Length: 129
Image 1: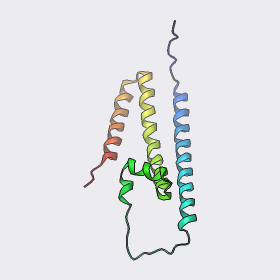
Image 2: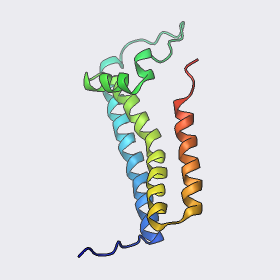
Image 3: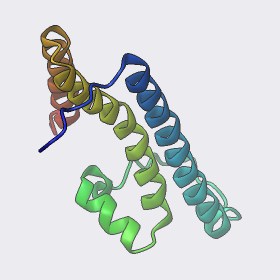
Image 4: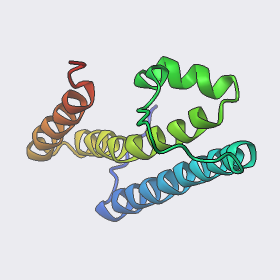
């Protein structure tokens, strides 16, 4: 015999979301700092050349490129990965909120949160032109 599902209280949901945001930002910060330290150890004494602007390398324009850079130990890839984690943290919060509202069967918040999630995903897809 299965037990009935226990509903999450608002306090439990708020506490989990707060921790998700707190630890997501903390973890992303640690990754960026580690990547930054590794980058400075390797390139910190190189003189800066401000005559030419060099944008982000093309390999960092995709998740696959960032993954490849991180797995190959590239310092800028580690920094970029930390920034992606920072961006992913509030998205994870919206996804968790959606699951919590579904579990609580709160139709109004399910609709609103779904719209927010769709807008976030749409804005992240962006145009490459």
